[in-house]
Image (tube, rainbow over all chains, first blue to last red; front, side, top):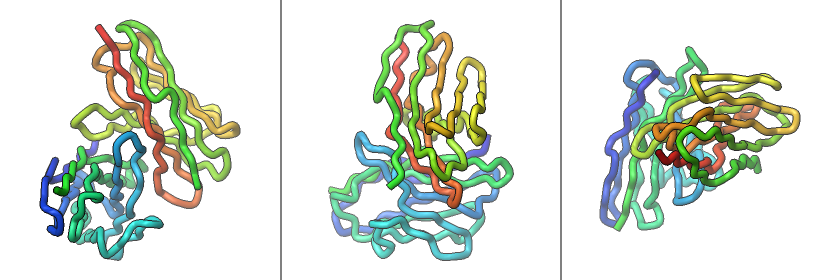
Length: 115
Length: 112
């Protein structure tokens, strides 16, 4: 099956710093990638839809200035958590849509802990 | 607000037992229902994409059924094995979007 990588797997940072998470589709091109967040004992919640070459579409309640998304190529989308605070600590996971099979393939996720 | 619910939340079974769990989703404006298998520290793995009412899909010992009119899908595992231990997620996709709305998952533990 298609492979999506995500980097880093986990990150610990100080409050106020920015953290960048990368999502790559390794063996297919993805015009659309999705960013999700999961808090403990909750479901994966869609944060934003990232479209190659255009601005991301954010879900209601997600601050676009806080969570910057860049989808500069057909295989790479990045999520930058700016001025991170402890409440941003969560599990962030991306997926990439493969148009050939109409499926979304997920990365392994990034555990972010903000001290 | 679209709501997707899965039950039970967790399940412990003995090796060889067969098991099933449920995903409930909105019955209106249905487009597709996805099932994923998610092992700890790995990426969620796509199991099935179901689109037609009455659809049944099978992959080895795992199968799924779909009822779009009443808004539910069942996932069955026949003869569970320890390697089936994972969280099983379902996700609903409505007709006018490509967004997935996830349930909270069913965590399956199979004991040898």
